[in-house]
Amino acid sequence: MNLWICLRWPEGDGTAAVSHRLALAMLRYSPRVACFRQDSVVLEVAASLSLFGGPRRLCGLIRQVAGSQAPMARLGMAPSATGAWLLAGAPSRARRRVVRVGSLARCLAVLPFHALPETLPHRQWLEDIGCRHLGCLRKLPRQGLRQRSSPHLLHALDAAHAQAKEPLPWFIPPGEFRLALEPDFHLERTETLLRALQPLLQALCGWLQGRQEALHELTIVLHHEKGRHACPPTRLALRFSTALWEIEDFNLLLKERLRHCVLQGRVIRLEIMADTPQPREPANDALFPDPARQAQEERRLLDLLTARLGAASIRRPRPRAHHLPEQANAWAQALDPPAARTLPASVGARVRPFWLLPRPLQLDMHGERPIHQGRPLRLVQGPERIETGWNAGSHQRRDYFMAEDPEGARYWIYRERETGHGWFLHGLFA
Image (cartoon, rainbow, N blue to C red; front, side, top):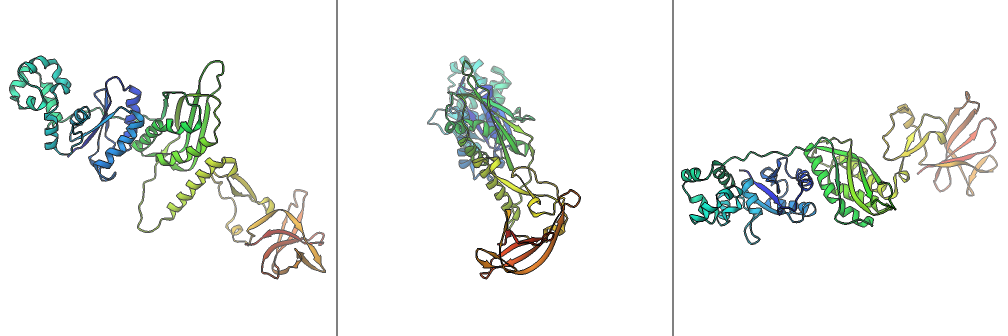
């Protein structure tokens, strides 16, 4: 059995842009979406009921999305698209949601016959014979009704009662996403931007759902008013360490980014562009805890910190092929792709301290023993000889040791083999 939901707005309130955005947003709930009769969008949801918790909850989710896309839109649910469309346009006290064909017939029977547009060319004749409602129209002899009216009227009546097929122009999402919106009023504060962006974000998430794709990058353009104080558009380039497609994830990161955004002028137009979408990895619900899910949560935290503190403030280590410890690492932005592995596996097996000092610290001496903070150090492991720079004119030869103080704290110290004078503290073990 089919089940349809229709979002219908009053005549003249909707535009082609509203219909397009709403159809995109509805792809989150069903792949079968169609723009219907120029004033509505319909979607077939029978296969989506269990996924979204049943008809009542699904209607609530769709109504919430429609509230930001087309606030005047009314919702109807029925076993046919035309039936859902008729119920969506019914008076406020009428029942607008049914799931059974028998209930649909009873609800349609009390509607005025002219609610079905195919009856309008025959309105005078129907009024003359005393036909006032769709229930009366349906009781007329079919052969006589066909002869006195048209086959289109009879087919529309059958389609409304889920007794005839309805050929619909299915909505196909575009190949690329670039959508703009002009808000009802100029935006002066960043606090209002997130709410104003919701229609575009909902359409974006529907587009991603319809194509089974996700985003690592998203561009938002804020166009400012023209005139004497005109300024160039503000571009917000968002990058994510993990691919996103849910509106909750976009909202969380965008909220933090907008908090640090300074508007150069009033915003009169909003635009969203999806950069390089990628196929979405299928979900895999495992019985036991999945390490991949934990890694995904870590990447989401990384995205949140990046949006809050800025990309330049969050960095990750990037090893370099160099023997000197102070030259063996560089720092890259956390969202940059990881570098290809260029180090041999044996490098990672060497004992290294948890913390490396920015510059080696020369230690005091008590006889032949190094001293740190007044405590003598005892050599417990080593030496590890590091020698480099002989071909670059900066030859360095060091012997590294692990040392321990009387309280058990361990240090990474070395001495120069060329001079043999003094010990240097270079790292701390955890």
